[in-house]
Image: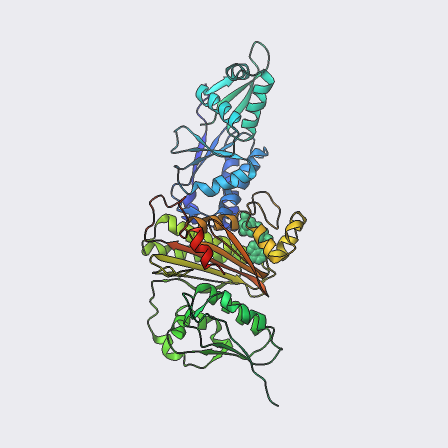
Length: 187
Length: 324
Ligand SMILES: Nc1ncnc2c1ncn2[C@@H]1O[C@H](COP(=O)(O)OP(=O)(O)OP(=O)(O)O)[C@@H](O)[C@H]1O
Ligand SMILES: [Mg+2]
């Protein structure tokens, strides 16, 4: 089973209730990156936007688009960003930015609740994510079996999800067959 | 030595809904004539103007900045009526009073009450991105006090912030940019009618959209004319920077305007493009430096509850009949 992850909650409204411009976005993003780096590996940064009234596209892209793109580039290793927000208009600009960048982000209504995907994720990866979410933790061979795929195909899908920061991937060496990947849900 | 005055005069309409209104379009003739000989006095004759909309005001501001480079004698002729008071209320004389001579006495205006709930943003001059959040916070507070819905506030603020950011980031304008916002208790764009409308205007005196987009060779195919460049700049992901994630500002503003049943209009160089929910029109205008943006966000009396994907305010037919 996936153990409880270390996490921090960042209240975005501390930066303002009306968030505009790339300039402000850059400052907020650097702060978020700092908090993310300070987390232990495997940790989750919840960015709570519920107190924010609105953000413009430029701010949303500069903050979330750039941060998630850096995370997908491996900069923060296995430390994850999760948005805390309910379904509302505010998400539109975050979503537009992630779609442009072909990235995605997990969103929960509240810390501890099950996640939805914001942004761009092809159907087959969404299915794979759902299987991992339901299992909480699953080995590569189990995943491949459930998706009716060979090991390589199953691993490819999960590797993509891990790179997008939507699941946690680790290597288990104690398995009888030697090394194998285990995939865990993040939240 | 005799001095020759050059008189320039906007072409405000004399009939129809826009009669007497200083719009951006009515300044076309003035822009064309603004290349006055250096050093000579210029008379800016606004006596036929009965009403100034924000895009007329920001257009006028940029025009005066432009003329100030050429001459230190600009005379403004105004008729009596409400125009001088309106200009005073919009901080026009605060910005330009020391550069203009006028035919009317401004002192009594200064003492008059400045309260006007429709004024959401007086004429403001800004130069950097750092100044934008403060402008947004202020207008948001006014909107909140006047019970605008969060959705409406977001639409107005996002429009203002994105367009203002463009002006300071892209234009290289020697005098920064001007913005003004006004709410009306009737629809003023196109055919006058019931409902409410917010007009947002931003203008700069910079290099223009075609020039900035041409810096990115990816857009070479789309920068032959100003109108093509403006149309191209409205597409998602089109940015002079070419960086991933950029190029969303104008697209989002066009969407906001379309959803509210309004329009986004951009004048840059010799092009002018206006986009609505269902169509985009372009026309050629006399070339003038800078980029002039006008956004109309109607608040219709019969606003449906979903606020989003609804039919445009005007059907294609009536809108077509109004165009031009
Ligand atoms: N006031 C202006 N003066 C000159 N060029 C402009 C102006 N406004 C927009 N542009 C041009 O239009 C392009 C598109 O503008 P848009 O706001 O959509 O994207 P962006 O500003 O480049 O990126 P983003 O808005 O996502 O931060 C700009 O990159 C620029 O080339
Ligand atoms: Mg922009």
